[in-house]
Amino acid sequence: MAERIISLAGSLAVAKDQLDNQAVFDTLTNFWDVRLFTSISRGVETLPPRLLPISFVALDIDNFKLINDTFGIPTGDEVLQVLSQTIREKSRPYDCIGRWAGDEFVLVLAGVIGADAEKVAERIIAGVRGTRIEVPNEPPLNVKISAGIASVARISTSTKLKR
Image (cartoon, rainbow, N blue to C red; front, top):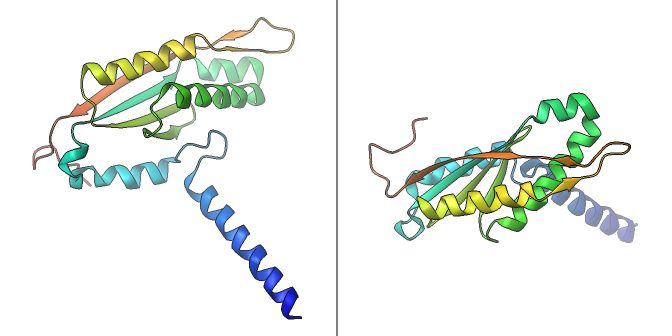
């Protein structure tokens, strides 16, 4: 009986860890989900000076709705998975990446501003441009992505986020 209880306790601990992980990570891309990303980004105003400047890069897959409408949601999901892998590969290992919405992603680049943030975004865009996604009985998809960047050199009362 005791062995059975210990075994069940171990299984419960594993299940709890899996649920905790699912609660903060997007299951399709394995990036932070929007709730975790929003929660953490609210702490920007309390960042230690060593992490400043900071940039946010917003990424959006061009014509994603058309991909879903034309080829179906499973193909759209494959596009998200392949592009999320490309985004991760073209980002620095310590960059924070979140899936904001269906086809939108956000990166937090600590210690990066201006032209350096643009270089990261351009590297990701070029990586996506070079990614081809195979579709049965169709030519490979050449997916494109757009980016926008916001940077902050220092946090003051005028730049603090409104809640």
